[in-house]
Image (cartoon, rainbow, N blue to C red; front, side):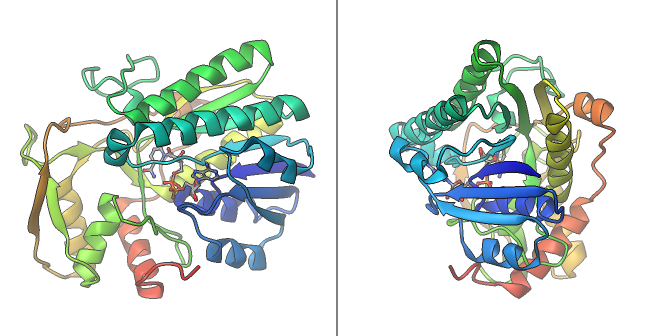
Length: 335
Ligand SMILES: NC(=O)c1ccc[n+]([C@@H]2O[C@H](COP(=O)([O-])OP(=O)(O)OC[C@H]3O[C@@H](n4cnc5c(N)ncnc54)[C@H](O)[C@@H]3O)[C@@H](O)[C@H]2O)c1
């Protein structure tokens, strides 16, 4: 039986990973989350169908005493997702972001050192790369975060680099590009409030749940809208499963991009949603976000080749799953 700790496990990505890992009966999973953004309802649902033992503990990583709730338990694997994640907000509230994402991580790592829990998978982001780096972004492309959120992520990456040397941590740093979608039964989905991700906003616009406003300014791409590396969250979940299994076997870790390996524009996504729903919904123009980088996409060959992983799930499928999710829960989770 392997003891796994998931921080931020009540959030968008955490709930999807938890559900997948809990299909196995050889994991004993502890989920911690301060519920500042996450929800308990999906955890309760996952617990009901789980083969693993799942223990949820409300815990705020910023408060070192809160770790006493873990009773000095040693974890075989730590999956560290807890973070504040909104770029624009981080520009206005850098103190909150560094305190939450960096201090919170340091407290976690202190606990890990104390309990000899040395294997960790850290969720980082494509936004650590320099926007001037050559496309596609590779793991050794130059980094240069342009906002406090991305800076906080890179700071944690760097802390982990030194901790792997000094404390013999095995560290997987997964730099996610733009995961999207929901579970294939529509029971687990996206409920960030306010919604900031593109896919959910467009799908909600198509279903008439809320208006979709186009906020990207005109950029120099094929259709004038920004291009990002969107990929299905189910593939992100698969990547985590593989990384966890290899950490269990003693893999030393490394830095890996996780994405589709190609880009889609905002208009491409709007067209996929129109095609899947058959609804030609209205697109209003919102307040433009200026200064965005026109195009960003990943080179995923490092993770693909080493772990025989390929993105298998399409963006069309991501839209279909989001439609199921919003039909199931138009107002999101209730608790
Ligand atoms: N969603 C994306 O597009 C994306 C892209 C790149 C990287 N990431 C990374 O993936 C991770 C998960 O993102 P997400 O989309 O699931 O976000 P999310 O906001 O849905 O989930 C984050 C969870 O962390 C919890 N949390 C935040 N601060 C905490 C603290 N101090 N103590 C305990 N819990 C805390 C929140 O309550 C929430 O449940 C983050 O680390 C994020 O940086 C996400």
